[in-house]
Image 1: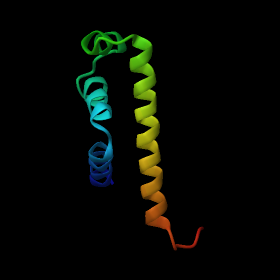
Image 2: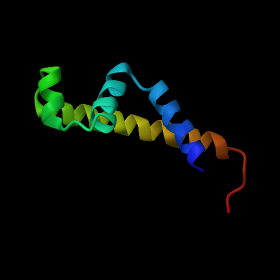
Image 3: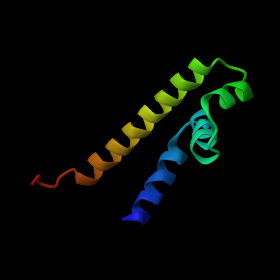
Length: 77
């Protein structure tokens, strides 16, 4: 359900580091590209890409951990 996705997105953002929240805000919500973010942060484009990749990987792990916790103890299909 859409409400569940919004809640999950909020949880992921709340549990993410300040650096990741800043990257997510710039890239996804402000629709900035790698070059713009790199210039703003005074870092190489490759650094922005690798940081965003690591933040997304951590966010995916948070989602997987949450899903695992929700299904723990329930029999599979």
